[in-house]
Length: 262
Image (cartoon, rainbow, N blue to C red; front, side, top):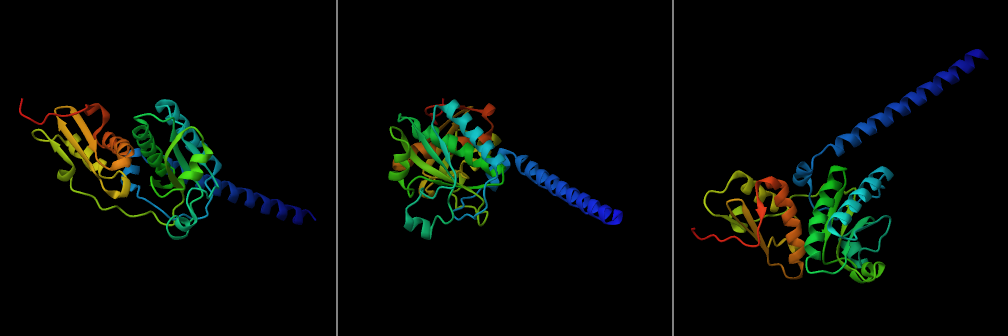
């Protein structure tokens, strides 16, 4: 009888030890993902349109919601996170393009001339932050179910959604233009400007057009976008990436840059 009880105790101890070690290993894996810097995430992140059924853990959901709150407060926005909801896309889109999307950020705020840019900027932050947590994302500005999503938040302007979750793949780098096609610097471009432009080319833009141009002179930098109704959001997305690549302390945004000789 005592031998049986001892055997059961040993089995119980082995089980608890194995469970403890498993939890510790998962904790290390989560810390490893979270320790990815935003700049590292910028280079690792690619658009992912198909997702697995793996649920986002509660602790990661909490971190995402905190980040959303920070962005909403800082930039006067009303971004929301919808979980386990398949209303982001029309049926045909879900069938052929957006498979498995059931978690997404609604990019929304009170209508204003600069709203799209603020949402683009915050969206870039949320996508890269999600990447540091081991998640994948997809910025969608045109093919989402605008009527249904807008109906969830009456009185506000919705410019798009960001699908988020565990991708079926990690995506692939998108085709990009050359730096000289999207930028110009008066004189010899410093390394921070070159790195900023390279980072800007990593930003997702509507229809992958990369219809922007960045000018630099001294420590002044300006950016223009010409992508129709998507120009504001594109500008915010590109600005965030340029800042992350160049380093905010190296330059100042200015309305325009005069490239003529002084």
